[in-house]
Length: 82
Figure 1 (spheres, helix red, strand yellow):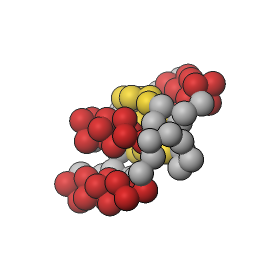
Figure 2 (spheres, rainbow, N blue to C red):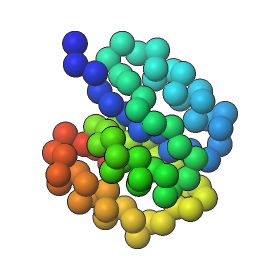
Figure 3 (cartoon, rainbow, N blue to C red):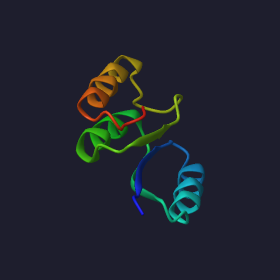
């Protein structure tokens, strides 16, 4: 079975931890990183190249202008969803 890599980004630790626990319980998903701000999300997305990024759009250090970087990242990783 192929694992789907997931990056979680949410500034609320309760939400982030709950999602990580729930998604981590799925046999076909693996949470590669769980971060608390937008800059960390961009950095970890570039580092791990996850297939799926669950991103809270209202959190500290979130720069919407950085989203095109994620789009460019997807161009280098066609299987990614950002």
